[in-house]
Image (cartoon, rainbow, N blue to C red; front, side, top):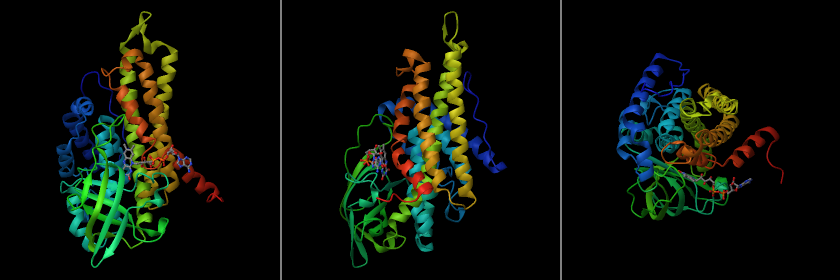
Length: 390
Ligand SMILES: Cc1cc2nc3c(=O)[nH]c(=O)nc-3n(C[C@H](O)[C@H](O)[C@H](O)COP(=O)(O)OP(=O)(O)OC[C@H]3O[C@@H](n4cnc5c(N)ncnc54)[C@H](O)[C@@H]3O)c2cc1C
């Protein structure tokens, strides 16, 4: 452990193999990720070569079946790995989570032939994925998407625009939800589109508040032709596949949020024990001690909630409500804790000399992606009180 660094989070890991995995992850974080995070984020640099290394190290397919190159790890282990990666750099943690989301459709709903043809490269062969659901006019109301796929012989021809795509323009494959039938959720089908498909172009990436190293771009599909062999699941099953991916993906966002919050708390504690005012370390003052105590408590509560949801998933039990609750609580916690960390550092917290202002900017996006926190509340309420009767 580097001098002055906070002790690593004590992990609850179910096997010796998972403990070994953590040693590898922590070494990789210290060597390859943490030292470059601040400068590369400021410069807006996406570490593509790092993702190749993560893929080759088995960290891009951890929770998937080893039959197709995955790591066979329980979700509770995968999520704790994500937390460590996101604590070092959200662009990396979230990037791994989005890649995993992009693999979900094929791994869960693809045919054996499709899986053996594509999954080994996707899970451990160096490829990077992206997930394309949102559009300029459909975000929260995702079932109203307009991108069309029209059958032409053995092919489908895709036309439309996807928006806000993480890894847009640099991904090797895109899981794309497109309309093949009538209006609403039942008219949507999923496709696996190669990154170099003819007619597929990316706009200039969005200029964002945070996560500047992670490219987010619109994608234009101008008559992109894909063979029917790249259709994932049945015609009309796409929206169900998209939602199933999001249940798991939301747990990834929850884990990333706790990683960012933990990193902010560690900075705040280190600063508060060093910085002196009125002749004493500011950590002596009850006003700050209670703030630190609340931050730590909220982080532990969030971690316990995402792990409980992950263990339901690992046991094959329904976990959709708990995933929404974990996404909601953990991302609101990250926003609160990172804002408080800036406060603990006073004026220095507001400068680029310390990472807490970056953590605060990064936390904000986690309340928005993969269903805003208003949408999470709608999902939870639906589990409690049934569908909205309007
Ligand atoms: C950095 C970044 C990366 C992203 N990556 C991806 C990606 O890889 N793939 C992808 O498909 N999408 C991605 N997204 C898109 C993201 O999922 C959407 O931004 C999100 O779902 C919200 O959609 P919207 O932005 O259109 O907002 P809107 O849906 O227009 O919502 C605007 C506001 O209205 C609220 N609202 C909407 N409907 C309701 C309602 N019924 N009740 C109460 N409040 C409501 C929302 O909560 C929000 O506060 C990304 C977004 C960002 C910012």
